[in-house]
Each structure stands twice: as structure tokens, then as C-alpha cells.
Image (cartoon, one colour):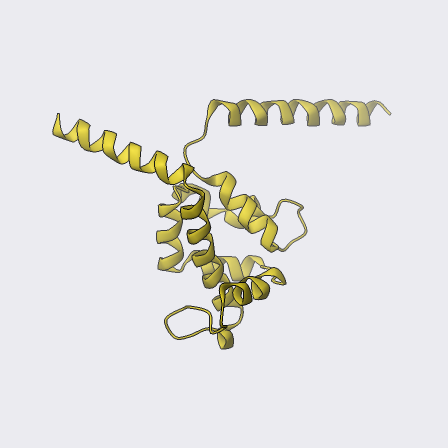
Length: 151
């Protein structure tokens, strides 16, 4: 019973974290600091925080970033990044091919919007609605391919 109670408590904490937008925003800022640090070591303090006077400066630096597969791989191997991803309830298996997942437009780089949106969508356990949405998208692609083949 103690083990079941501990599991129920862990699930409740996870659910609360998933709903807490301030928590997500704080963790995303920490992830962005790691990305900016990896891309431009000169703008970072030794402890991994941004030298600028404000978080707005760090966001401005991140806004122009184009994250390549090599940069994301270096970031992904950072233990601090891995801990934050666990805190955000992003499954470890989702981290292994993170670049392909986050590069939504297939452009070969990830911008700030793709990074934040992608991480937000990876959080938590997959829901039935996620699976149904993917199924509908696959059906649409199949129909488009069929129409293309007939044209």
C-alpha cells in the first residue's frame, strides 16, 4: 500500500507540473540558456547562465538561433539538459531523435519557435487523442498520394 501511495503521489506531482505554465516557462528558459551557451560560449558565464542584464537579452540571443543537428546533439548530451527534459516529462526515447522531431518544416535547422513548440508537444504520456490525430494525418497523406498518383 505504501508503494501504491507513493506512485499515486508521483503521478499527481507529474500532472501538476504538466499543467503549470510557469513551471514550463522556467524550464524552457533553462533549456534556452543551455542552447545559447552551446552556440555562443562567449555570451555565457562559467555557471551556464547568460551574461546579459536580463532574460530578455537571452531570449533575444535565442531568437536568431538556427540550431543545427550537430548543435542539438551536443545540447542533448548535456546532463543538465537531460535533467530538464526529465523534469518536463519528455520521454527519454523521444530525446534520441530529437532533431528530426523538432525540425517541423524540414528545413535542416530548428528555430526558437520550433524548439519551444516541439518540446511542449513532447511533454507527458501520449494520449488517445494524439494517436487519433496521427491516424487522421496519415489517412490524409495517403489520400493526397493516391490523388497525386492518379493525376
